[in-house]
Length: 329
Image 1: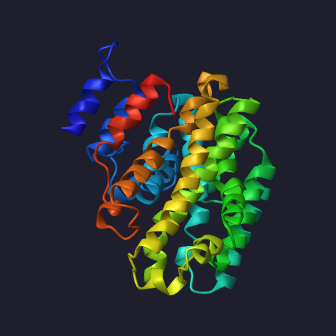
Image 2: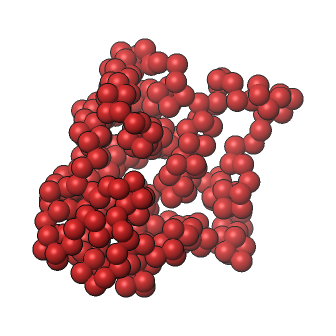
């Protein structure tokens, strides 16, 4: 039913879907977003070539950042491929921490991307799909090198996988990763506006906080807790409480406090919505998924381990399309 609703929404006014809406419906239906090349074998179609890198980036997003994948499909067509490359670059960095057993290996991979960015700005990108697409995006939109390097530096510092000392430290990490990613997305959209940057800062911080919450069950299974220590101590909660999956009130109070901080950032971002240029709004569509998570966690009384928090919202494509059509975040 949700997919039928998406299709109906796509036909509003014009009677036909734009390319981005068609992509959104296709992805929601589970169909390939990029049609397979005709007259070529399945193996050949995966080989590098014109358009192959873009497909690889989109597929990486679909598998590793599904919500970001859906949001990317609703960006203006002239900006979409570049934004997908940027998000794929972020995914490549983000998944390093979870795919290594030794920090040294993680540092080597970070160094690869640091050198890749240096080489990209010298017009000599490595033969890697994400790097090639990022090079195209940088050439097309003159993306700021300093911001790309900031994301790498912050991700590298986070390889230690330790708990944040306080909520401010978590917000700093979120500002240097998620907010910076939004600044670059605004560049891709051709937006240079102080109010849009202010919104990007708050939304990025909210996203970083929510991502930390969503990762808590995963980290707990690995005998790790990265939630801000000051809030845990304030409520008398130890790391062992999260590792054991404790659902006592004081544990839920910790989650409530952290989630409330994310909500505050979203409210700040929306308070200045009238001052933000309309063409900046597509960069902020991720707020729909963040809002959905905050609603779900409130519904289960801030039990971070509740099974419903891990279920995909099948109505998310519809909600994203409606918010995009209304030009709201």
